[in-house]
Image (tube, rainbow, N blue to C red):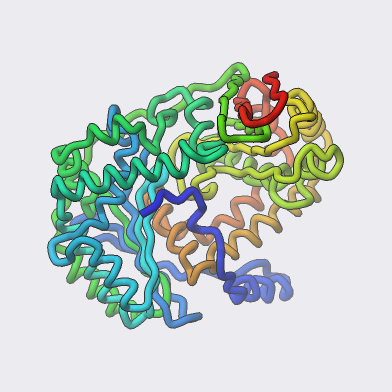
Length: 464
């Protein structure tokens, strides 16, 4: 399975019923009353279970999230969490090599897996009458993975080739999603090459794989969400039947993943022999997750880079014409909710060779310098509308996959998947003073890292 750099929660199929329900309540003057159904409990072995019924379509999603991402993978084994994601498709006690994939596809479903900062996830979307089959299959590989040297060697080659194709042999291959965390962060857990150094991938052995599986792929380190059209009593019985007797495992102490406060701006230039235009990314360390400032940064993200009316898009694209592709956000490998540790707010763009790095940074500094004084309640209100729209798209997208993503993330990180129903109100509680305080602390120059791609294919390239 390919390491996805897209957000699984992004909607590809918007179920507008969700937004319609909320809009109907707004018209009545009561605000958004739509609530995601959440039934949350734990099995005796520690597995966190979230059920969320939605009869909009005759489909069901099974999503299994393990509380292990590449942030805390073993040192000298960079890329190991992602390598292990591939191993999970190589067979289990009752399903041979690639038979899991065939089982899903032959039953009319789709599936995927991905590795993120703080979790590795697997999901299947199937016709609802195949729910039991998918629960059995997921339990089968949680219970016992087929760990062989042949499978390991094969997947080491697959992942190494993926690194070469997606990063090493692509213009802007790791820019900025893979590169920036390595430059902006100080703590190894946040700053290493999580896609994997080729030497580290070669160094993985069967003992590493067996230990990793036994430790991190245990039920007490996982959450499972079932979203869609199903009978809750039946689903509970199946989950108990197939997952209930899988033994728990002792979990090691969590490493310190904190980042020190950045006091001075950092800047780096990376040569790219395949790029023909310069590119720049600017990153700022995020506030602590779930703090008032964290929600304020979510609003500032909407104001600064999300959508055609955002301030940096207006300045850099429409007014100055430096670029046509300002993009950015919180957590390039997901969304602002599905991570646990330190994170960056970042934006990036490519620009013509006639434009300089100083032109870009000067324009950005102008926007940032005026932001605090120009900020109004009306701007915050518009940002909340945009966040609300995005949230409903995420909840309904891909037959409910975005909903499953948030439910599992909140179960793993907060032990509270019902948080999904309080997000909008959390943003609404943020006032102007909180946002201005957040600007002062988190959008200061000293909290910023700049990464410039130097395009070696471009003629007359200069490095500023």
